[in-house]
Amino acid sequence: NGQVVTWGSPSSGGDCSAVKARLTNVQHIRASRFAFAATRKDGTVITWGAPNFGGDSSSVQHKLRKVKSVQASHSAFAALRMDGRVICWGSEARGGDEKVSRDLTNVQSIEAFPNAFMAIREDGTAVTWGSYCAGGVTTLEIQKKLRHLKVVRHTQGALAALRSDGHVLTWGCPLSGGYSLTIQPWLTNVKDIQASKGAFAAIRKDGQVVAWGKDSCGGNTSKVEVHLTAVQSIRASAFAFAAIKATDAVTDEGSNVVTWGSAEAGGDSSKVQEQLKNVRQIHSTHFAFAALRADGRVITWGSKDAGGDSSAVEDELRNIRMYHNQLRFSTARWGITQLTPMSALSDHES
Image (cartoon, rainbow, N blue to C red):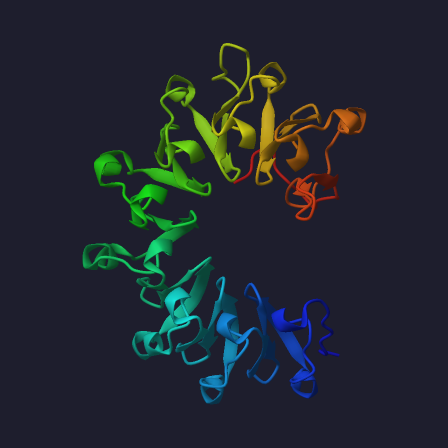
């Protein structure tokens, strides 16, 4: 019936009594860290929770009409109206600056990041706003090139955008991957980008990998560079990366998986390397990885407390064939909790 029930810390959105009467015919709810925004069927938006995190939208309430979607950063919200205008509220420094709305017209979609937003216009151009240390501010040169974006990834302090022509643009905190000028010649013909907390890794169409950002987060591939060929896909934990190679391009151990970055976060897979053969999928928690082999076995590594040690259920992690999009990890305990049926999942993720 579109009604809303809340619980938890009252100051963080657990108490909606002040707006309860208006929380009817709700279709979507978005959450910042300590506030909520509900979009109703009539296109109006109701907010509650901590004011500094977007819980108070009174200054823009009259503009929140005919809204078709709302996105949330850490402490701000951005609403996209049917007329292509964007309305922002919450922390000004982290994307809630109302003044940004003046220049945001003909917007088709909005992407949200921890402390910044990106609007994609109908003509394919993009605009960012929010914290400089989170990719919310771009140089004029970057701004001119932000068009026809295919993929956008974020670290804790930077953004990286993959254009449809295979070029990669980066901005934000230099130490977190926002600076890539010295490697730009290699950031061409890229087919995908992945991000850890402080580094990026790009796969080129020729199967080579380019990484940059903090060494401690996987931004340095020098120790495994010789093995990073014929790479088909990459997954990231908070501080490490794991790459799947083509099965005909295995390492000396016969493995088609290469890992690098923080050992505690799965960057060191040496203890299970000989088991990482014919791997078809890899998924991650913050500090661990889980790989699905072609024979249905699941191999894990990384932090024990984050799901990296599955020895207690090893016998149950066999003949695994059914998934719902991906191997599911618990967001509460950071461990493997369930494997649910999928409709039709190919051997390799696209």
